[in-house]
Length: 68
Image (tube, rainbow, N blue to C red; front, top):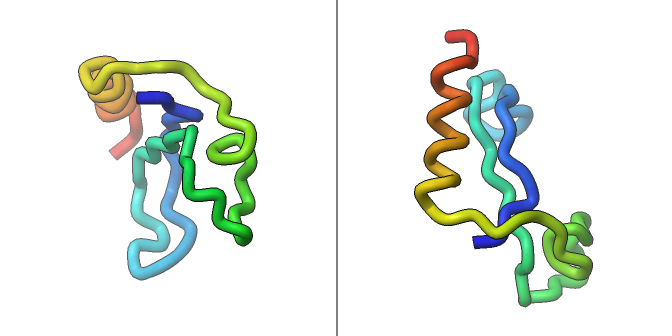
């Protein structure tokens, strides 16, 4: 799976605003929505190929190092 980025942050919108979260942004979407505001995920895919195990490993690393 091609991943643009994996990062830890605080949710900034919706009913979970303020909740610490780990975000996994994929890349290579083929839908080409006219309202898409992130060309690096669709029109100009950028990122690395990661297996599910690698993705889960990166998430686990955030869980081990992120403040509670």
